[in-house]
Image 1 (cartoon, one colour):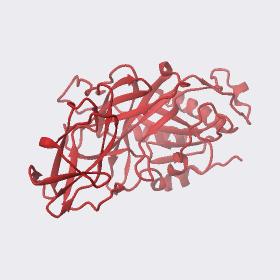
Image 2 (spheres, rainbow, N blue to C red):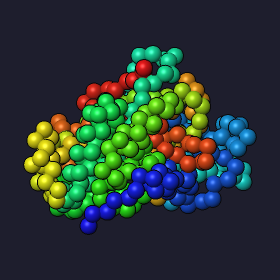
Image 3 (tube, rainbow, N blue to C red):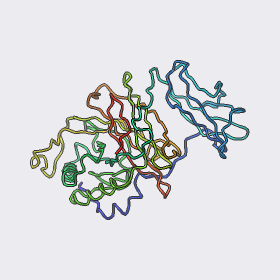
Image 4 (cartoon, rainbow, N blue to C red):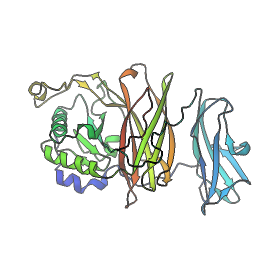
Amino acid sequence: MKKILSFASLLAAAVMLISCEETKPDNTVTATGITLKCDKDVIKCDGTDASTLTVVTDDGTVVKEGVTFFDGDMNEIIVPDFKFTATEEGTYKLWAAYKTFNSQQITIQAVNADVPGVAADPQPSNTSFAKKVFLTQFTGTGCGYCPLMVQAMNTAFDKGDLRNDVVIAACHSYNNNDPAYIANPAAGAFGGQGYPYLAVDMAIGYADYTKVDNLIEVISKRYAETPKAGISANPKMHDDQLIVRVSVKAAESGEYTVGAWLLEDDIYGQQSDYAGIKNADKEHDYDTHNNCVRVADSKNGNSWIGYELGRIEAGKTAEKTFLLKTKKAWKVENMHMAIFVCAKNADGKYSVNNVVDCAVDAPTPFDYK
């Protein structure tokens, strides 16, 4: 059934969307008094590649002795010189105890491959980043009205000269016989109440494909906002796994999160079309689908805002390594990534502040103005 939400009501309800509250980690113990950090969340399982652990009290004191480490099963483990290594592939959960304090639980993944470092920064002292707007498109080959939204997007991009200002991720979540189908609850988490539907920077919902000028206005306003951070990525393919080292560099001190979505282009699937758009619009191919989300790695509690990086001071960086598993049926040569950074807003919620489109076979350095 066709369902259209008014532009005004969507703007008024923007706070309902995925700019969600912070979520607490799922711990086996109650965290209090200290925080456990690691400099690398993915290491090679060769017994020598180490992730350095740091324990910090709530007043900012770094604890260098008297700390006991435990795994996720509450077993004590030995971490010489606060450097954690592994000799077997797997996911390792760790937490720390100091005096009467317990830390939150962290996760370190060990892989049988070299882990890439961060991409080289061409301008280390620069914090004036290029800006793009993240559009999450909820669609499906069985959605007969979805071509109307695609047509509205194409018209808005051309009329508003916006095509180079956006990164699109198409979530084909409408029908499970869609060749690009992705099974996750993202549509509901983004505030979608029907198809087709757009989430703009995980902050504003848009469903009225009849008002192109309003769509241009929404995207243009988000694009006009000064980016608070930039993103670089360094990928490495290993068997069926894409290892991506991401660096987030702050232009403005604040709290940030980061997420990485794996996308695939040129997926053929016959598109339902109740309005006859495919026949009327010969310029665009509605049966070949691009920017299709294969992996959405940014789940944070009930939201999709990404993994917490904590506070990053202006000019400084924080890193996160993603492991994105592929399938044989997917064509790696047609893949790329949408990597986004969310900034914490004054109301304590997060929304996307910047996003980059990254290759899977070459580094993507910070993009400066």
